[in-house]
Amino acid sequence: MALVSVAYAIHIYLMSSPLNIQLLDSFGVSLLVDELSSFFIFTNALVTAAVIIYCWQTGKKAFFYVQIAMLHGSVDATFICADFISLYVALEVISIASFLLIAYSRTDRSIWVGLRYLFVSNVAMLFYLIGAILVYQAHNSFHYAGLRGAPTEAGALIFLGLLVKGGIFIPGLWLPLTHSESESPVSAMLSGVVVKAGVYPLLRCALSLEEIDPIVRLFGVCTAVLGVGFAVLEKDTKRMLAFHTISQLGFVLAAPLVGGLYALTHGLVKSALFLIAGVLPSRNFKQLQHQPIDNKIWLVLVIASFSISGFPLLSGFGAKVLTSKNFLPWQVIGMNIAALGTAISFAKFIFLPRQKSAQHEVKKIHSGFWWAMGILLGGLFGANIFYYKAYTLANTIKPLITIALGWLAYLGIFKKLAIKLPRGFERFNHLIGTMSLMLILLFWMLWAQLQFST
Image (cartoon, rainbow, N blue to C red):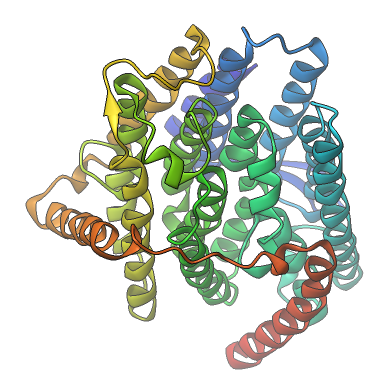
């Protein structure tokens, strides 16, 4: 099914015009398949294929692969939905499949983390469903376009649900614990594709309704800066990657028109990094600095880190260049700070010690790992074709300077810092309480924007 999705994504990308299918004429229930959909479906397909191949020799039972199949299909469904009720159904199926994957190991810790994710998700989707009903009440239609003319509280409720599901800004702070405590292949799926199910509808709404675009862009900037602010100080590898998932989703939202390519690049690189983190001898950066890793592991780690930092020859470079060209003037400073923080964060991986044969390997690396790396990292090289025009001298200078400054800042300052980040904001009760505060903020933002537009 992953291979079928790859073929279909390519077909969509090459289509001359979007495919719009009306399922229920009187309710606005419809499907929309276009170039933006193709990038997200392609991401889901490659990540799913890589995770399945990675897990094939690890003794996973059929139950695990059934949940992967359910997750793959439901995530694809979110990328072709054009109405709020179909999206609601798809997001709820994603929640169930994700919970079962998070709790797959059946330890007390994994079950609690899974239940925590499920409850936060369900609360968010209750808000979302009320918003969808208000949209229908206003227009007798569930179509995304119904946000225009719907009550302000409808948009606020829907946006809150999507921000939580997508791991965006403060409502997305459930993400670090969930992603870091899950098994590596599950983390790869969650970070690579599951959170995109909440981001994609936000992009679609921003592209359909011009009054929504500034709000989505603002959340993109705030999310990028917030995530990278925690990531540069984090000492745990998987938590650092999780915070960077939040940050990189901000880049996707900051330029909705070209968010598809950035989503593809991020999905491939972050899935690869989570799988690599699962075979490192430790999760603690301080310990890794004294435990040389095998040269082959270090090489794939560096390729992935280079891509997310925006180094040429990898699709992360083209995605960052294309995204930066679509920033509005007020976004530039914040996004440049986020880009610099990204280079600082991934210098932690790039400057790890290495040797020909690792002496402290925790587990034997099976062949499925290397096949998965071939798919994901190969995708990072191949995705350059989507924006080959990025390769000009003018476009190359800025990313290289940003990366160099990030490395210097890491070696001179951040490598020596020993700041312990507080985790109180990730507590379950705080996550639920934050939703109420964010709902008020969203209501005010949408009301102000709609009043200004009219």
